[in-house]
Image (cartoon, rainbow, N blue to C red; front, side):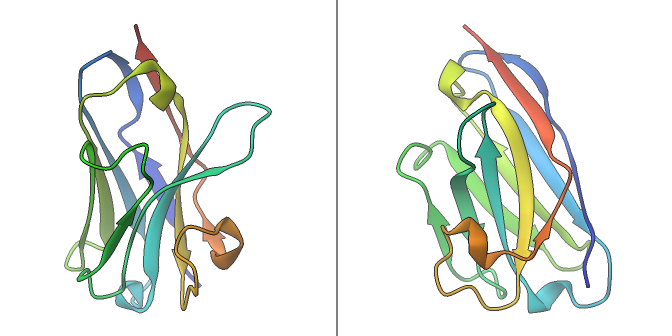
Length: 124
């Protein structure tokens, strides 16, 4: 079992940056691959980025590649999402997710644990 709590969301102007963090409880943080998804009202949850259990592999959605960076800190049991060059299309609720053995990092159904989400709003 793992519990996830996101933080760092807020309002930012287009072109700006935000850093999201997800704190994971429990002693088995290194057993989980971690990911960020986002969702806009009345739309499906969208994959953003994922990182393997070791942190050695990362995967990004094409829409954020080159602008977002996912990282994990096993000493602090956190996974972070650095978001740069934000635009209005990045506005969404961002969710942190954990999975023991995802076969497809970008598929939301692979993740069994989810945080409550944090709102990111980019003003144009």
